[in-house]
Amino acid sequence: MEGYLESKVAEYKILLDWIDLEIQQLQKKGEYHHYLIENLKNEIQKAQLLYTQLKTIASINVPQLFIRAVPIIHNLELRTRLATHYYIPSLQRENDNDLFMRKLVLLSAKRLNLPWIKDPIVCFDGPHAIVTSLIETPVIYVPTELNVSLLDMAGLYHELGHNVFFRFSNIENDLLMTVSRYFDELIQSVGPMAPEKMRERRKTYEYARKYWLTERVNEIFSDIFATYVAGPAYYFFWINMALSIGANPYKINPIDLHPPLAARVEACYEALSPTHKHNNVIKLINKNWNAYTQNHKKEADYDFKCSSELLKRIVNKAIENIKRDLGLLKPYDKPLPDEKYLKQIPSNMYLEEILNCATKMFLFSAKNYDDWQKATMKHLRSSV
Amino acid sequence: MSELGSISGKLQKEEKLLRELNNALLVIEAHALKRSSDFGFSIKKVSECRKFVLDFATRLLSIIKEQAPPAELKIIVEHIKSGMKPIDDWIEDLETLINQIQNNKEIGSENLAILEDIMSLLDSQFTDDLQRLYSL
Image 1 (cartoon, helix red, strand yellow):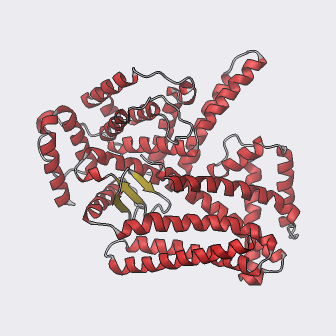
Image 2 (cartoon, one colour):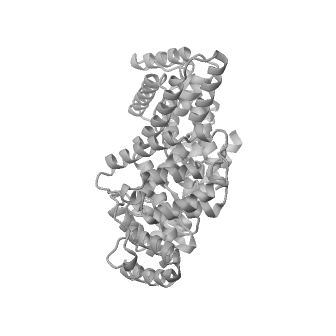
Image 3 (cartoon, one colour):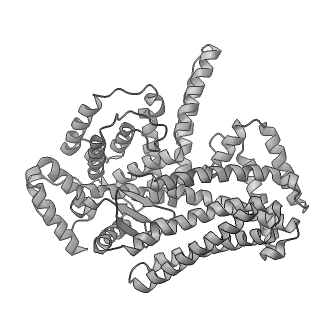
């Protein structure tokens, strides 16, 4: 440990000095991101404190304290990784397209009552993803096709959902509690049966309860949030993606931290506003989805782990949390535009409205969609 | 869609508890070894860290038997429940640690052993998630 600690001290000195220099250069260069850079500097200062502790442990060479060095090293790994892999490269290569998308994100964040999102970076380097470590200044990755495709923009709301999930820690607790209570009730409701069978049944429910890790709860919450705020546009985006993936929608992959596709679709449908649940767009999407799912069999434990009743409870609790924590945020319940108005280029519309128009246009007027989308994208770029 | 959103936020939360608990143990242990001045730790800092450990142990004790503990302590509670060591022994160890701090007694290594177990658990969860972040 002794020699290794000294080596790690030398390694982190090089890294932290480099990060410091890069941040200084970005600070000189940028007209944007003052808040983010200050935030990043604060984080690096915390890393410097950890580095100083590590250096002291290495230099005084008291073996009883070596054990304290290990978590410090792991902490430094995370902090340096965030800076060197996500923040600094995204800031260094930020271009006009990224800045355009950043403006859209900031406008949406303001409208959706997410005021803590002060200074995001958006980076065209797909797939859709977000680094939520610093919730006020997330790094949001979007696929390159968003330069030309409105439909895929709906995926942004799922990523914002991750940010909301970590902003309010009660969401995680409440959803995990909902899952836990559901399985408790199932265990309690087991009627008289042979002890061996009873043990088996309990084990099955316990196993199903443990399936719902924080990460999976987070993913399904982000779907619910995205559907709540973007309505049919997200529902279509998600089903379109699920159909394109082409996997068994009921497959429960123990390594994948996303719930099965079918469970996510069901949760999204539950989260749709009643205004939309039975409109012709949703009917058309569901018709395609149902035809697809009919070709696949449910895995044996799907109904245990992802029953409709459990998903309904998760959706209700998630929406209850959204209403409580983001009181001013309204669900997307605006009726979709009538077909005769579809070809108009939307002006004075906010992004969620435009994406819902795009969804309807795409599904009901595909031959006109390309020209409409180009014109709409041009309008959007000139108006933000 | 990537797992980056859920992993990066989770790591940030785990990092906070791991850093704070490790820091408290470093301050307390350095004080016990009479090496506080090497780190620049003041007596006030030692007292704050004892308070941190007291609050942490008290909180853990209050939720140890809950079916759905708060998310950040879930892994610890699940480990306690599923491990070889009886849950009553954990409770007794936590109560002893709390009494030592409340009665202003030195915290010996035998009292800190329970926190070392918890640290090792938190660190192991953290590094699992860190590896997942590296693989994305």
